[in-house]
Image (tube, rainbow, N blue to C red):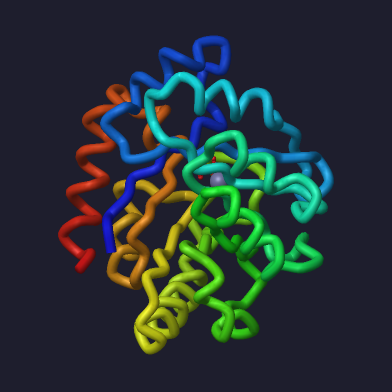
Length: 220
Ligand code: DX5
Ligand code: ZN
C-alpha cells in the first residue's frame, strides 16, 4: 500500500490558506477537518473552504468530516472534487449507501472510527471503503496526546484487510509525530495525518520528509 503523508491544516494560518498549502506541497494530500460543533465540541469550516482548497490545485484534498448527518452532507464534498471523503460510522445512518454514493461521485471513501469504536462490526463490509481512519485521539482538536491503546485496533484492521485481500488503506489521525509514527506504521497504518507535528515544526518540508522516512522504514 502506498505511503501517504497527509498534513492536517486544522491549526494552520487560515488567513494565508494558499501559502500554507504551498508550504506542505511536498506531502501527498492535504487533510481538511470539517467539524460541526455537534459530532465534536469544535467548529471549523464547511464546503466553501474545502472547495477553496481544492481550487488552489496545490494538493489533492482529503476531507475528514466530523459532523452529524453525513448521509445528508458528505456527497457534496465528493462532488466538490475532494480526492477522498471520510465520514464517521458513529454518525452515519446508512454507511453502505453513503459510501457507494461518495464513490459514485468519483471520490475515494473513508470510514472513520472514534477511539472507542471497534473495527469488528465492519470487517464484512471493508470492501465498501478505500480507507479506514482509526482516530488515535478523541476527534475535535489538534495537539492531543497519541493514544497507544489504539495500536491493537490498527493491527486487527490490518489483519482483516489482509485476510480479505482488499486494497484498503489504514489512516491514523491524532498525535502522529516523529515519536509515534513508527509504531503506527509497524501496526499496519500507511496513511499518516499530522497537524501540529508539521505546522509547529520550524520547516514543514523537512518535517514531512522526516515523517515519510520514519514511516517508510516500517511500511511494506
Ligand atoms: C482532530 C483532527 C486531526 C487534527 C490532528 O480531531 O481530526 O486531523 O488536526 O492534529 P494533531 O496531529 O496535532 O494531533
Ligand atoms: Zn482529521
